[in-house]
Amino acid sequence: MIGTMPSSIQGQARVLVVLDQPLLVEVVRLTLKHGFCMTRDASDLDQATKVLAEWHPHVAVVDMTIDGRQLLQRIREGSEADGQIPVLGLTRRGDLKMTLEAFDQGVDDIMTMPFSPDELLARVLAIIRRTYGEHVPLQPVLKLGEIELDILKRRVRVGLAELHLSGIEEGLLYFLAANAGRVITRAEIVDALWGADYVAGSNIVDQHVRNLRAQLQDDWRKPRFIATVRSRGYRFVPTVDEDADTA
Image (cartoon, rainbow, N blue to C red; front, side, top):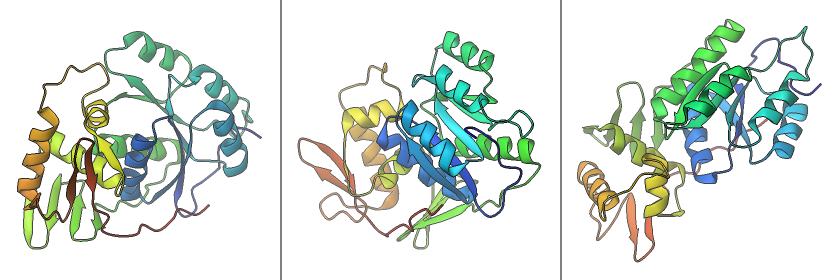
């Protein structure tokens, strides 16, 4: 049945991500690897319904602006006896009306976008613990080639050098690394880190990229991690081939 909740977690937790912003989907995917979660994504109601029926996820992370009411109704169509898939709703910052409506529609928790990777991970793992009574193993450190990301300590290690990043620097690194090999425009970085309605200064993105590069000891003329693409934006240099998620 659509939306029927699995009775327990065996192996990795399955997380459905309903979000029509591919760049952010990749950030969610990378972040949830810290929790040994596998993900599948959907950009609209029809795709989400198909994944619900075929894959039976343990948790759904849902952008409430994408047919949120209809999707939650589809989830509720599952067997009441078996329970319903818990939902983490995503809303826009400052949109109190949408937040209240999401709770009225039955979401288990709410996060506002933009979000920080550590908060996203904490909320998803907390939902799993409350719903299934199980603790998903946590992998604090992820390795991306020479870079080690420690989400608990909000720390990055490059070789023997240990870095302590600000919240914005951490978010920027996850955003770029999650979309390695893809050119990311400055406007896309602003939307992801500050929100679509944020009025950014003319060089705010460049300033934060410079700060991150300085900590990574990354020479922009011979980049190991962050390359400048003239007149377009930035590209994170791929450092490792990630293992594909499996059902």
